[in-house]
Length: 492
Image 1: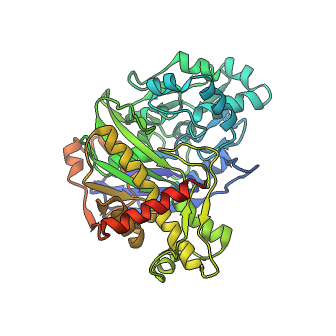
Image 2: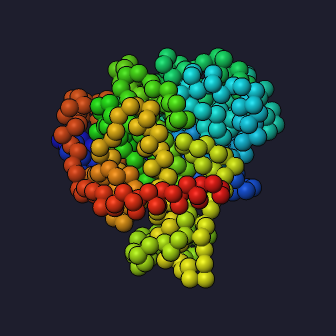
Image 3: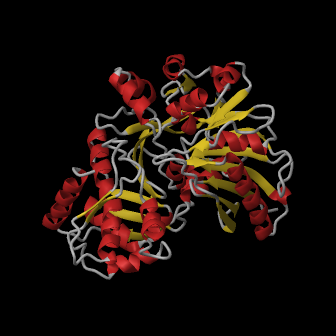
């Protein structure tokens, strides 16, 4: 009898559930968006209950669409928006505050204080991360400080903290299991990267009690069983879990050191497998746990740009220059160049390797002749150009040049953007047949845990290339674009 894997991809703007068979053929795919909450400028929140409702809804719809018996689901994999922070009551399951999203910058003052106090070198050495509001640490601290009674309740063990992976496992198991996986734990600023354990000195910096924390587990093992979820059979194992970017690295079959991918979602995230030892960056990149399987941890270097697809959403929703996101490609192609316009998509600050949480977005070089097509093209160029800075820093840290970059995520379907990326990086860009590699990675990790796949080599045979983009831009023209980009960066 055919076995199926259910992959929950809980993202920043919506939840997607994919049902795959044991040949990794997609049998159903359902997505449901939920509300983005902006209480103040630079604050971003989600209602955790809305996330859970979207998860329940997409699960039920996907299983119905696949027309399968829920008993045939061999396992459930979860991949999630990382760093987004939830604290909830252990007895009732009710959140004590809205989830604070990874994009949120409310704690930048506290982060600046920690940097000024000289904490960053220790934090980077211990965690592989730099001090930035992006990570969960200062978000947890903020909730404990600003929600009445939260700190006292946390110290008594009445509250639970988790990133979204942890929250979903709690909900799926009816509150029986409180865990997080190694990849998500490595994004909190609380975990010793080499030991893959919570660290008391880090917890002390942020004033976070251990009683609040989940247990750290591997990325491919059985964590618990489903209980009381509509559409799913009680007892279905939850058995694969990874933060979205690590899941995409796994889904792109980047199992060997030096293999790399870039995911174009709300942001752009470039990860490279560095093997069994973490590489601490000299260029303010992040060292992170990629996955832990059978007790062995694989690490990665990461460079994150906070805004990529979200820039296109802003052009649609904020400026109204397009009605639907896919329209940007044709609009940008309607002009030969940007007419001198440069767009720096730092709408939520600048990520790697600049790490400027106070940065604001820039559209520079406007004239009376500027049209919405020029702005559209400049926006796509900005999305691609920010990855040049990340890749150059990554290559210097590793002491090797990348030849091929695998790409995924919604925006990688934009052929113009992918050609721009190849031109500006001067590297080959390879797009797989299945571009939803975050969900695929979660499915593969789950399938590996329950024996649908025997090992990594069997999984490697599943990957298929769809298209390859090669650089067509000359060196002089490329340098001209990079010079304009650097000028734009100076203005954020």
